[in-house]
Image 1: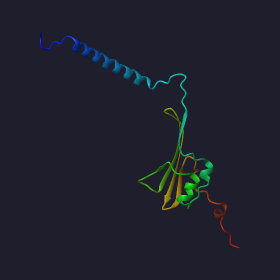
Image 2: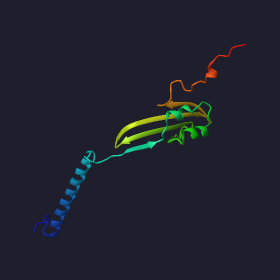
Image 3: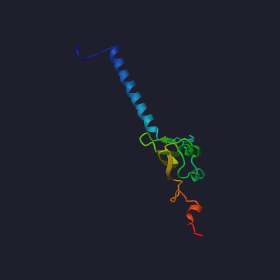
Image 4: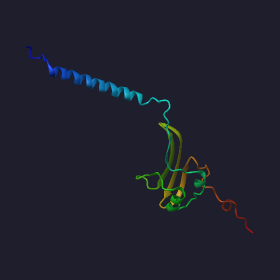
Amino acid sequence: MPAGHTTGKSALQSRSRLTLSLSLLLSLTTLGACSNIGFPGVYRINVEQGNIVDQEMVDQLKPQMTRRQVRFVLGTPIIEDTFNADRWDYVHVVRLGNENLSRSQLTVVFEGDVLVDVEGDLVGENWPEEDAETEAPETEG
């Protein structure tokens, strides 16, 4: 009997293990390829993440507000940057599966404990809006 030739039960076990391994690999590859296919009749829900910030809330922000006042108006920020403690980000995303349906962002900037700037989707270009009393020049009388 040649030295490299195997017969009997061990050869059969080796073939069945190989067949099992190949069929398992083929099954996993097939399932992986099907993961991006949308199956008909499968309902996907909208997933909302982040802070809901509306125009009314942004309109309440005024220069020189404290961090505590801003947190009261807008809520706790979704992102407090550990490298920049003077910046808070409020992000709101609505997704359907991997597709973004809507995204809004608001960034609040402080100097120390005082609000100095607001940037984002709901902020007008003329923020902060001046009060009518401060805009009118004083007349001498």
